[in-house]
Length: 109
Image 1 (cartoon, rainbow, N blue to C red):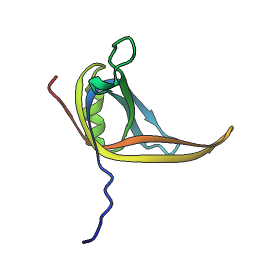
Image 2: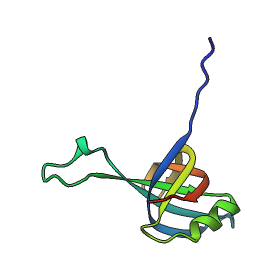
Image 3: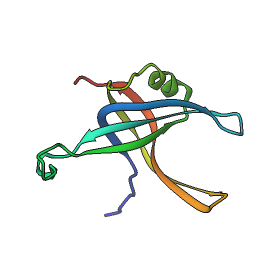
């Protein structure tokens, strides 16, 4: 039996913070967050539902257009891969983990 690595992410949650950015290279990207509720067993001491807020980035023109049509609070399904990006800034080496979204669609609440 051979083992194959898989890096595939599927998120279903609420959209937050859609933004379009032009990189120094001139490339356009769209960033947004998907907010997902944690399981009921992970509620805080006050009984409040805990959430995860996951950073997403979109490079493809088709997916960018779809994300730009969304508004905060819309339910979405985003499919892609987990990426860790590295760069060197004024304060030294930095990294960020985000979901690189290939496909996005509105989801039913």
